[in-house]
Image 1 (tube, chains in turn purple, red):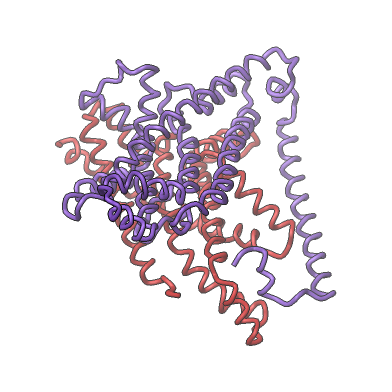
Image 2 (cartoon, chains in turn yellow, orange):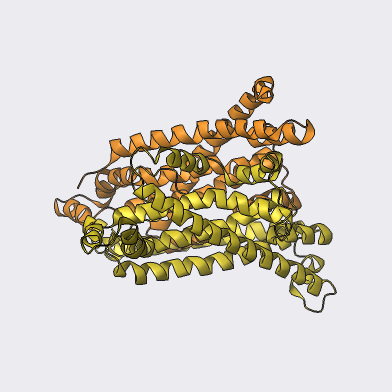
Length: 302
Length: 216
């Protein structure tokens, strides 16, 4: 039942019902405005609208304006670079894991399923801490890799979690295809791996594209978790640096939030566009990205 | 491995604290999420506007930014609480947006024929919603809401990273950084305890899914 036909719940409203709805709208509208005014009064009362809190962010003639936005710009670039590296690695590893999970026999995939369940059950921030403290303890050395160590703590944490999630998304996509797709591939003489690579996987990718893009939004958001450990200057960390200097946490964090929201909104919008375009070109039934398929509980990441 | 047995009380206390945070935030997020879902399907346009704005803003903002906003922003306007309270508040505010969307997807999944049939046999709007649509919607919404809740359990770890002491990750950081314990053992230990929450939660959810599924 989509929003548009919610009206089947009741008859076409008559004059009295319409009047009631109008009164309701006005009352709620006024209440909302009142709440907004109270918040405004509180903020004003605490001096949150004083210009020295805002001008470094808004006024190009302010002496710190350039420096502040240079910091935030660097932060955004670092966030995007981190997300890009993490997404690329996660998708690549996810494809391998996903194919392996689908194609291995019932018994031989047990260790793989155990690994998937292990990483899927842990919080990303814990995985980052593991990359930060546990891996070096086990003898992993980040030195030869380019960039600061903290960058790789972040990337390893994100990849450990998200490659598993991407694998599960692809598995759900492959399983959603009609069996005839695979059988047709085998019948024309392709090997099982070729069938997977040339017939099943491309369609699974298309069916699951919305879920994949939503997961990319999650990865992008989760890059900010490295701010707890520190060492990598992504957007939130830079924002923290800025507001500690300017002493305006509310204002700076507002802008950090706006930047994150703008980037993610663009990605989500692409996800919707992709859903409409791509799902038609696959034999798979579309799957709600919030919940992939029964039995995959816990795949959702926020 | 002595690290784990020697500090078993710390691990166990951390496990209980994390479990406590999860339960508080579970209740809070379900209530707030249901209210906002109610806003989003209400016939009153401004309420719908408020609900949609809330969901779209919060969903696209990292939990860490929400947390920083609450924990460092609210004291600026004279609201002072412990990190524990701020942390739970952030987790609830953030998760509620996803609970709302999951519930709404439950309502949207009910075929229009159900509502039409109810109208046809003469049920009023309230009867229709109360005895036909909502009971089915709750059952359809169990898998997505459950997945959101499990994700929230995992997200609760950021409270420890933020400096709320005493939860699983908080104790792990205490053990490795301040007391210089062997990180391998400590992290395997807390990994085990996290899985002790998330894996049973997943199994319970699968059981509920099977019980609640509507075969059509």
